Image (tube, rainbow, N blue to C red; front, side, top):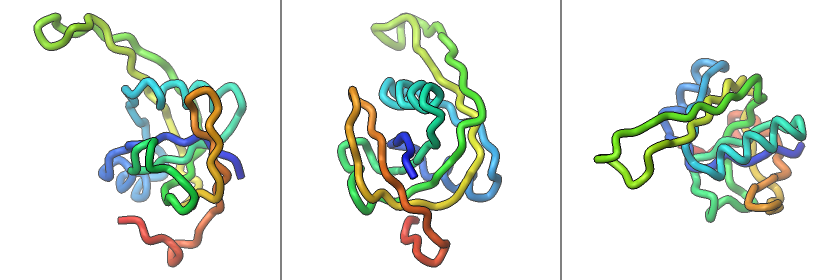
Length: 127
């Protein structure tokens, strides 16, 4: 199955998703926000992984999730903390589908789309 890659997700988020199949994930990375938009447009599933974008390749393991809804929020930040005054945050509500391993990765305009094989729990080596 094809899925849009959401990379660099914290381990605690992945662990929470394994314990509770519904979760809202807050994304700040521009790549991840664009990836969620692509998943919405193309009606694709998400592949969430701890690995950074540069390291996602065949064999990368993670979680497959269905994107239920997503919305962008613009937040103002005090100028003392950053050179920017506004940050875009995407809150994506997801539902766990299962475990997965990347078979093939394709880059499309800065977004990673992967062919993912669903795994059985005993096949998973993550964590």
